[in-house]
Image (cartoon, rainbow, N blue to C red; front, side, top):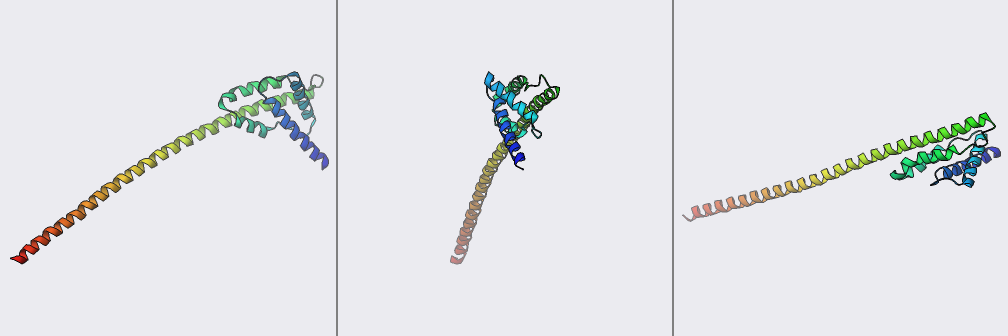
Amino acid sequence: MEEMNNEQQLTQALNKDFCELLFKEGNLDETETNRLNNIVSQAVHLSRWHVPYEIITEYIYSLDENRIDDIAKSVNEKLETVTAGSESDEEIFKKVLQIRSDTIRHIHLAIVQKQYIDDQLNEARDGLSQVKDMKDKVYSDFIAILGIFTAISFTIVGGINLIGDILGKIQSADCKK
């Protein structure tokens, strides 16, 4: 159980460091490149390590639109420097290539998802704006109708009073005769 816990902690640390180096702005210096190689070398020897999709997705979703186009190219360039000692072992070389492929593929997937979500969000905002405009128009129409109804009511009440006054004067004139 403790061995499993240690492997999980190592995996989490490797994932964090892996993504930190991949998404660092600019190129990696020699020390950082060696560190990335070391991380991948450790990762290929772990039985349960996988590309940290959740961290990659979270990072991609947090990017501005102007940085999103360059990130896949930047990460690919950094991953091309990774050998992780695979020159002498074909099996390790295949795992390193798989890590490169999976990472780049997932970055592209996260970018497509982010763009889709952003498009849906923009459409929802547009729809909300239309609903707000419609609500404002309904309020204006309601106030106009209320004004017309009030004017008609005043006219009817005034007319009834006028008719009442006229009939009262006619009746009063008839009584005086």
